[in-house]
Image (cartoon, rainbow, N blue to C red; front, top):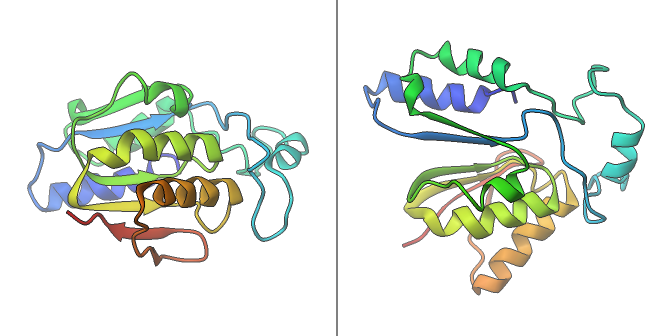
Length: 177
């Protein structure tokens, strides 16, 4: 949220004196994209479409997840990690992942909430996650669409890694080589 996870990562890299890592941030920087029928809150059964239609951007509710690029840039600058190593890719993640991606990934954190962006994120980025790399799935337990996308992806791969629960929603695992 607002670059917080990236800030933690950058601060840890600074602490370790590792300042050559490239950090990619994919986001609309304007809030959520349109959800699909898969995108239902797991705990309540309320559709994301209904939630978005009953809340206003900026009403204090974070369903819209609006974090402007300028705010995120200011937040990550505060880490003193080399700013030139941050790559801000702005737009619908399901589309921008088709045009601009790193060759290898050590830490993959997917936090796009919805089915479509999670599905595309896994299809494009997971093959680039190096063996021994860490994958963090933020919304596996909260949004049915994200869970469905993850389950479908790994079913198609023929192997589902053990995903350690972080909390009710997040999962983390290591990619086997």
